[in-house]
Image 1 (cartoon, rainbow, N blue to C red):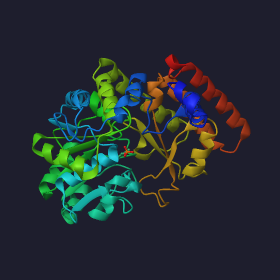
Image 2: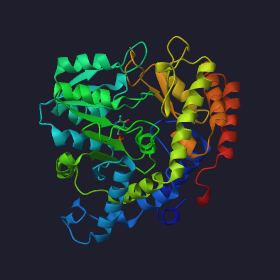
Image 3: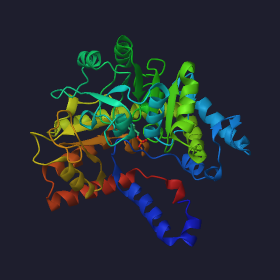
Image 4: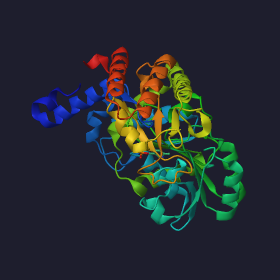
Length: 417
Ligand SMILES: *Cc1c(COP(=O)(O)O)cnc(C)c1O
């Protein structure tokens, strides 16, 4: 796929490229942060814009020859603003983590206090983990999810915020299957005199399509990844009001980055254009329906889900008490059958985030392949069987056969075969 030249010049890389296409086609991608972009997005990302330096913003660049880069970035910005109904969009962040770093830099001074959730509570490394720059530059206070229910308790968050007196509250999560009430968090932030950054990395596409409430126009800053549910290819984005526009642009460049990856900005332009089409809303609705079908299918077969279900694109399975297996073992056993997902901490997890008690499964990629609720129930059945019999060869063989059938029935990147 798109690799004729590499095949001639660099067989070693070409082999890995071809093998990866094959892997994506022949296994089920249930990593909740992953998706399959369109071939148009792939083409834009693999374009000559990788050659171009375009430091600055459209119309005000540090280098010449930027007229076409300007056009591409203006398209990406205009489409992002329309898609998210935002006053300002910066489409240059190389990823969601850079978007977060920039948004923090835009409103904080070193030593300021941020209040965020840690990895055990569905947070992200870039929210102030001590190994991340944010954890070293800012004073990090933490809030959690309810260890029993897995839910975000807004009154408890308010108490934490009154106690910690943060300069910034970070909301938005990597493994939270429920709707987030942005207004409630914003009012807490306002009451304690803090900025509010809503990180919608995972649910950018759900927000764009209106199947999850939007924090845009509510939170001071909204950050996201563009390669997850919104399917616009690898990258990040910051959205904000006109009041923070200049601070955000300066924080992205020169604050945390140099030249923008213009090939990825081109991918974002194409992906946002696709997300503005009515078909994308249908896609996002199907994502939520498929996640519910997966949740129901797993629950019916003896799995315990954190929060008891899902409103979004993912489920978080708490293996404690129901299964004699840990997250990592489950991840490995499922991958051996062609079901690719990840071990994940669950709220209240006594185990370290790298060797946790749960698994996380998301449906954005399978939904892109055309899976419906019935197919998702088959996926649930496969997962449940492996979780119950992780080392049983007959089960593994049977599940692998089902996975092969599902892949054959839902072809991927067909045009490039
Ligand atoms: C995925 C994710 C990010 C960004 O990750 P990148 O890999 O840097 O794009 C940020 N925040 C949350 C909550 C995420 O899940």
